[in-house]
Length: 127
Image (cartoon, rainbow, N blue to C red; front, side):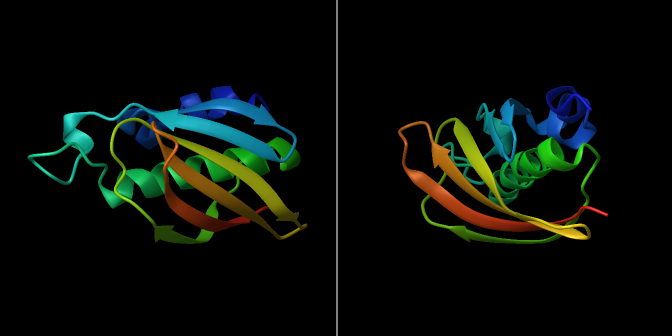
């Protein structure tokens, strides 16, 4: 399965502008170009929490797909928001566990100035 192509064709991720930029075995990276309609604040461009969450979920899924070579529906995801997501965002994900039924992935999301804005852990169905 072409992991990057699979995620490029995901309608919701495409709508938000999530792009998976790198996929290696058990690791993925992605980015999102911030724009006004993704902001929660009318006066300052700050990513809505759902935008940050979607970036983390998509990149986390890509890291696991690189190992299991099939789609991995999200079972659960926990996210801690650490700072406001201003400007463009990028995420890095690493698989913690890849089992026959579920996989666990840790994801970190950063703003363009390298400030960490979120820390997430996703659980995905692998089998």
